[in-house]
Length: 149
Image (cartoon, rainbow, N blue to C red):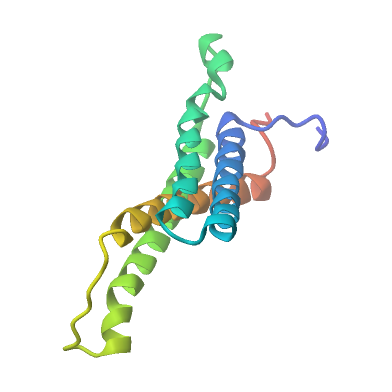
């Protein structure tokens, strides 16, 4: 089966969709930042990430037709992507928590505007969606498309 005949699995199609949503959210944030300034409004561009909730619609027809949606290979890719995403998230989380102490010193007092917290939440969601979709796509590309028997 050549590359053109191979069909992407539902999970890979979902990963491509989420990647497109994550890139669109980043571009929107950058455009809003340039046009309006990098305040809270620019981070509102990350609300585009809500479109990632639509991934359940990808493969809906196949599921209703009673086709097998996921096999052991897909589960392993899903597990690996989840583990990689968790690892990247925790590295970034620890780096964000420790960096102020390293830069300012252990006894420094730092005032944090409340606007930082929603921004951090959106950025964390963006990182999780981006890393998970990238790892999923890389693993499927490395192993080939679809379920070839």
